[in-house]
Length: 467
Image 1: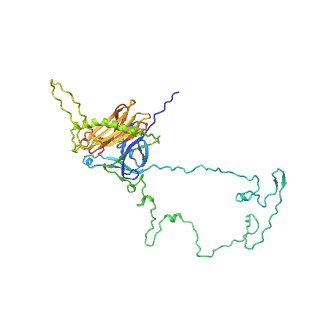
Image 2: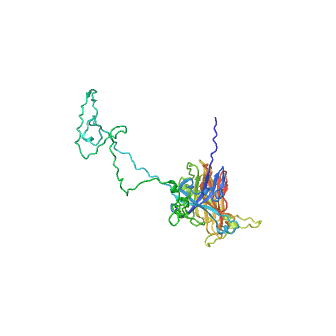
Image 3: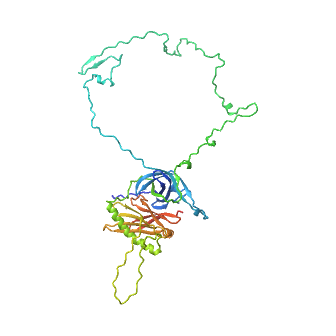
């Protein structure tokens, strides 16, 4: 019969671990809760069951810090704190953001075994008889105890021979100081018992033991002045210096400094907390060769250049560097005439300078299409840097298909946020990765998940705005 298993109930929290400095020894760090997959759908981990602390930031939770599905460390949450910024504090009902703080631990490296097979095998030798050789002096041997029972012994040939009768050893000479043991006389015996001497019966200073009278012990003893002796309160609950047991570490014992604001040297990684230990699924796609990476990068640059040029022309951005050449402006159309003229080929716009290029390859599902995330900046325009984020997939035909593209500049972040790529993550334990982006505006940010189900990337979840 066909058996249909019940769907697995997954409870999985996902956040972004942010730190400054070295990852092994960060100078400051924090955990930003993003999603909580529970009961088959996503919840905002920053506000879900906040009573007042969110469910995903309970003290004692363990988060696994991943890079494209590969574990790189463990974060043990020690406490959580609600941070209220100056801008939100001016509101009548200020709403802050919850962050988690804890201790980051690198994965313990398992030392390799240094044991090797011996070239010389051990050999066990035997003398072949029961005789004790001089080489076997250090081995234990069994022998009959002297003075044992008489009997017969069996020879190796199988015939029984009478064993020698042992003569009891003579008794040692009498010693006047040697203690002797005597049997206690029976109480029913008619023999007169020796009188038991009383030791210390006439000693007036000999201490004696007596039972305490429970009636006298219940009454407090009174002194001559009329006061009473009150016993001390030995209850531990009334001790003012008694230590109080709490879950987690006190704030003074946490060595990790809390991270505040959004510093320039901010690093980000995905952190996962799951109630079940699941099989590791790495989504990174390795490059076949350096030439493949260079060819893919050139294709993505060719796809990004016209988008950047169109954005600059639409927003009328001008260069801050006078030595750089701006994109060629479109030539205005001339009125038609009857005079036949030769057509001049249109001049191609010079390429826009690019900087801070990053490209990452992923395989979001088992046997899925190769997916590339490309980010780049153009730092030479009046509005500030122009930020470009593109997601493209390699089709079976060999060409690249753009599934998502975002272009903005530093002066228009409130209109179009900067899509900063964080990592590929499996938020629901389905072995299907989504792309996690940070949508950063002028004074706020939020996180969003995108999944490539069709030719276009679709947003599956977005958190609340964090100021």
